[in-house]
Amino acid sequence: MSKEEKVDNKKQMLVDNYERQRTEFVQRGYRESSEVFSVAKANAMVFVTSVPVAAVLLLLWILTGRGPLWTKDLNGFLLLVVFLVTAFIHEVLHGVGWSLGAKKGWKSIHIGMMWSSFTPYCHCREPLEPGKYIFGGVLPGAVLGLGIYLAAFIAGSSFLLWLSLLNVVGAGGDLLIVWYARRYRKGYILDHPTECGFIIFQK
Image (cartoon, rainbow, N blue to C red):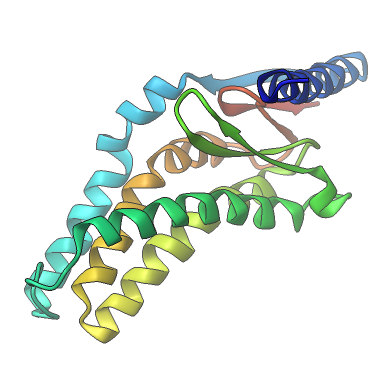
């Protein structure tokens, strides 16, 4: 079996699990609301969600005089490589956050790769309460974005500054999903296996 076939089979298993749970919720009398959107929309909304946050953090850095924005010894290629590594860590942090709220813990978490765009992703196989879903949604941006920014601010490191800003921008899709999820206090959120967003079931 080729790698592509294995990936397709795994994705089909995730989709089948998703559809099975949707059917079970409907049969139990739950009302379904969809908050699913395309990856293209998520990428476009970065300019509304995370870019303004990154701009505020950059302005704060400049106004407080924490250090230079760029230095001669700052290696752009190394910055890119480290950012790509944190892109994978980003998805692991989603998994960590969601696993804390999942009955089966880490067994409910799937981390995969969209080979067409060479983009890692994380999916939770079981439904979560809104607060627990939101926690897993914001965790990567909080740790890799704001956390690294705090370290950069303390150390005055321009390398950490740009790494943090890249991670803040990279969390733009997460912020969009969390913005939709914040409207719900009760119910069960089912993460979509192939698109950005979720479906929530409420009585």
